[in-house]
Amino acid sequence: MNIPQDLLYTKTHEWVKIEGNKVKVGITDFAQHEITDVVHVELPEVGRDVKKEQPAAVIESVKSAFDIYAPVSGKIIETNNKVLGSPELVNNSPYEEGYLFAIEFSNEKELGDLLKADDYKKLI
Amino acid sequence: MEKLLNELSSECQPAYGVECDVAKNAQVPENLKRSTPLGLPNIAENDLLRHFTNLSRKNYALSTVFYPLGSCTMKYNPLINERIARNDAFNNVHPYQPIETMQSVLEVMYELEKDLCEVAGMDNFSLQQAAGAHGEFAGLLVISKYFKSIKQKRRKIIVPDSAHGTNPASAHGTNPASAAFAGFEIVPLKSELDGSISLDKLKEVLTPEIATMMLTVPNTLGVFEKSITEISKLVHDNGSLLYYDGANLNAVMGIVRPGDMGFDVMHINLHKTFSTPHGGGGPGSGPIGVKSFLEPFLPVPRVEKKKDKYMLNYKKSKNIGKVKAFFGNFPVILKASAYVKALGGKGLKNVSEQAVLNANYMLAKFKDKVNVPAGNRCMHEFVLSPKTLFKNDVRTIDIAKRLLDYGYYAPTIYFPLIVDEAIMIEPTETESKETLDKFVNVVNKIILEESYQEPQKLKDAPINTPVRRLNEVDAARKPILKWD
Image (cartoon, rainbow over all chains, first blue to last red; front, top):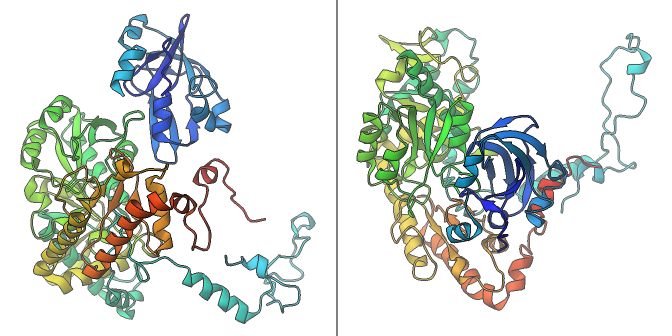
């Protein structure tokens, strides 16, 4: 199972990459493996305000549909529209080409609530 | 594979001409006129008959095979009920004809409402809803309107094991969907390993904003909720209501009643528990039952009886409105009614006893060989988790596909999601011991012998069906939606 050390994680299996005042968000390798083949992705609109731990996107796999939560509060400033046409990117490249969206966070303190790679490993 | 009508079409066959019903001198603008022929297939009548007969022989149906589809209750639908539903006395009634000339129709609905109340321990039922999820939605609208009427703001619903992020779920997918559609926010509650509710965890999520908690008893793992009395007390002490998902009512009829357990609102799937056909052969019917304090909120019309006359009451001041045209799916109501009247109270109790016995009989034959996460006893269905037995990259999907080769409809798989590699089996009360024995032997043979000796065969399965294994992923990612 691939759990990059330089990322942060949530209990609901999103990964978070901090880049200045924004975070990139996707689902973990573990999550994509569990939900199996992704067939459809719904992304939030750019400019939308999201709240920590509230649904921000939806991923549908051959198994079921899953809400993807915003790991921190803020504004959606970027979405990866490539996954709309090629949902398999979420399976094949969960940490790179299959990322979902980026949030400009509004409360830096919330980053402290995220899990480190080793803690996430223990969780799964 | 049977060819499509367009593929069967031949220029040599006589075409059955369709007379144009537009007058020749009709003033149709030139740009709206067809320039190409209609493209109807030319097929000899005999070939057409064979085409449809051959297609019908490919049907997988309860009348041809065992259908152990967990959670769906694929029991035998007595054919006599189909005949009753086609009786001219009911079939030729028009909903707009005068009330006094359709008393028999209203009587059937009135009587079924009373019978369902008796079975479920509720005070009133509405028979309008056209499906289980439609029932959930209407039931939740009743709850929403009730809280509005007493001026309480309660906008949240607890749904045990609704999916939380990419964490797995055990609730019926329809529960969170109905709740969201009815305008509520969903509060997930993680259940225990056997799908039951932890009272401590429940206390944590019971806030003043909770309108109701949706519960399926027995749950999707086939386990009865032992703490139901305590759950009911906690929920009601919080000022919230308790909603019963009647998907599994067929396990407890005549033994316990949702109304007595403390449920305030519920739905019943007539097409499960009361033996009316499912889905494509349906339509369905999902009556909702309520305690008397919620009766004013039920959808209209309500069937009422004054002296010896039945009537339809549309004037209920607090009702949530209409949820379906006319009287609901009346033929389904009629079939369920015939089923209830034929079996009576004792018969219905016997249905549940036999359903639970059949499931436990099968479980007993599996339990020493295959892992059963919820233990050695079940209600009307059970879930196997054969993950640890799998070698050679075999998975549950391969077992299910291989079962098709043996002429079985595959059980429900990968549900509930909280069980790894789940196989969910519901035999129902209407299957014989011989059928159950044969099925158990085939499943065990596939898992314990074939998966070791001939794993490739399982990966290739189904081998004997008209079409081989379909690519589910491509079907969803790149669907081909038209013939060309």
